[in-house]
Image (cartoon, rainbow, N blue to C red; front, side, top):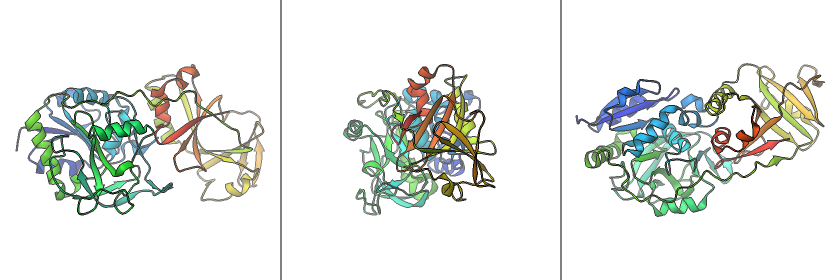
Amino acid sequence: MSDITVAIVSFPGMNCEVESIRAVERAGMRAMFFRWNDDRAKLNDVDAYFLPGGFSYEDRGRAGMIAARDPLMEFLKEEARLGKVVIGHCNGAQILVESGLIPLGEHLDMALAPNAKENQRLGFLSEWVWITPTCTKERCAVSDWDGAMHVPIAHGEGRWTLRDRGLLQELCANHQVAFSYCDAQGKVGETPMVNPNGSELAIAGLCNPSGNVVALMPHPERTPAGGPYFASLKLWIERYGNSPARAATPRRTAPLTRGQIDHLPRAEVELFIDTVIVNNEERSVEATLKRFIPDIHLKQFRYCALPQNKPHDLLSRVSFFNPNKEVAYIRRNEKIFRWDHTKKSEVPLKEDGVLSHLMLVRYDDYRDNEAVCYALHVGDEESLLSSSRTLEVLCNPHSGTLYRLL
């Protein structure tokens, strides 16, 4: 056993800590389990950090969004700048992307979006795939091996994508596409048989410009076949220690330009679906926003705009609306009605205490019929609407679009 220590960083909801510890130890390194709220003094002698898979905070908002904005991630950003290795698999990769550590170190430049092919969502994927390094052995901390590796994937949001095509070209030119999906012979391809989740360029994993931060969606820690991956990590630390930036850095991008948020044209009929019990996702998204805007209050709805004045048929389908768990509101011509499922009728509300002045609607890619609506109460609306940092809590601009609802 070497003196190299790797901290296995666990956020609430992660579930791959055991196999991650086993893989690190199998490679001859020491593994130290570290909870997100542990004393950071425990990390004084750590050589590398590993963020495992799972479902941090139940993927509320979207996968990795909440954990990425935890104060611990600012600490890990500084450690990465100092040259320490930071690896994230699956949910760990999603956290690294949402935090900005991947691909360039600061801004939200990409998304690990819901799996999709040919404009159709695929849902959760649990299968075995092949991956291969698509950078040189020395380019990143875990790429010093050859051939194709047979590893499992288990994710619902693993599709690498971004709006900035110029940045994608720069990442390729800078050899930051560290791993790609391939066939058993190591041939990279974007066909459905090879590229399981529709990722751009069949990307399986990216590294940062310096090579010491890596985000990978598959799980080499779950199989002995992943041994060379972790042996590479050990070799990198022995070779370079914690030496900072070794590689050329592409241009630093600003956050994706939003400009003014477009207004969503009001439909003839709009449905707002609330939950009867506490909505844990709503509470968690609000708590994340409060890190930046302490006085903000948020209400979350399922939102559906209907082109025709026929909401009753839709609300009668239990597959769409469950009256035991949900309550539905209908907005028509400035008036709000509550749906009475027992009488199959609309009850006018005397006072509109349901909706707010500032309402934002998020449409995710490849999901046109239904959206998420946030009713926001905040003192300074313009500060909220002009801040990428806060708007990105509500929507990753690389995998969805945010509108203001009139």
